[in-house]
Image (cartoon, rainbow, N blue to C red; front, side, top):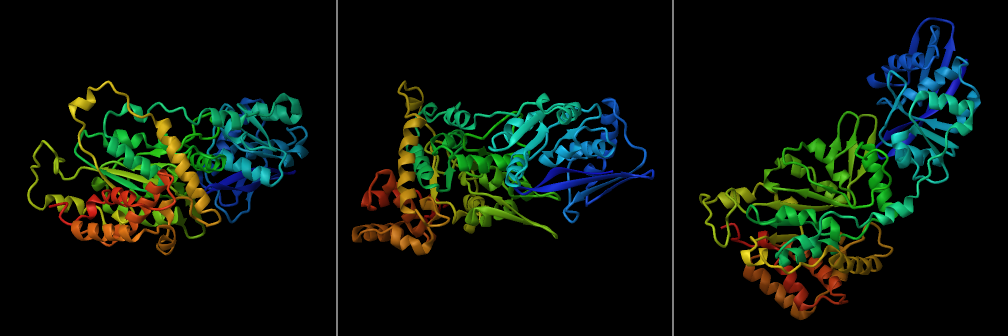
Length: 513
């Protein structure tokens, strides 16, 4: 007897529906075709044990399982449940097998029939709704995640017997109900950290506020213990809240990577990823035999923080250059090319020299001559060219550390950032690919960042006096436009330019001695 069930395979952040055809006929062998990998082939042993545990029999006749379309490689263990249900239907052990056509069924089986969670439940649910399936049957741990998709009945199951009973009596399971919007909006501002925790460092907070307002990349340069990491970790608390569309994109990526906690729904806060400096280039940008998203994609719509930037391998840093420009990464294989989104803010930190005390107000640098420049040269010019703000961080004096005065909270700063982003959203309405000042192209720069004659004079004098490089010119204009937006000014004024100029430390000739 031939029976068809339906599963789903995840490629990139999207899913493809897979038809699982099971035919039981005369013979004595099990065949699985349709480009399954080893994990899919091993399902035969898990299915046999699970069926016997529940009192059902595994056929000793010829069983052929075809995973169609047969030219796409199937990976992972999530097809166990759909194959098992197909075998039950083909051997007439399942009541109402005609209802199988209405559902996508996914789950990994344990030997006792318990169903384990899977990766990518959200994109699978989106694809099931797109193809007008009545419902989706997934492990209970993934039910809330998949239940975010409307117009689709999502059933969470714990054991294969739950699925068997469901096809016998549809009322044995209730669809998962998720109040997505209410949960999402209620948890958007629940941060455990806040800018009010930081004593002093008002100039650094101001720089990070500008970075957040214009989606600018920034690098923090300062000695150990100055607070670079603490400040960077608090940046997501002042970014505008995720929209529902952004939250859906971010959740899909984390779902595919298997990073979502069990029984979770939409990600409500902007991600903050901080990989160790020993990370490989594949782990950072994504890839592998079965391509998975890397750290830059997991930081999509959020912040990627690279602590001690010069300690990262040069090859790792260089592979980031193209994704930073295109805001996506393409992983190509012989038969398939997969796109992962990668629109993130890069925040990095570094010591000014190997010993960490170059330009320190109190401690003396012990590095030999030329060591500062050699240390800085570990970061390539093209990568530095993509960083708009160079911020020097100095240690907080004891008088500020011991002061009782509370710092400005994140909520107050975030309000200003949101207003600036709204101004930019109005400015770039209808312009594809641009939503903040950091994305302005060189051609658009002349139209958007117009400065007065006095501003031109100031900028020329600064570039001559500080020996700023040519690449600093565009960055200063973009940052000054963001500063003007924070001040709700239609024009870029002298004071906006002057503030932007001070954020180009590493471009100054002679800064590294």
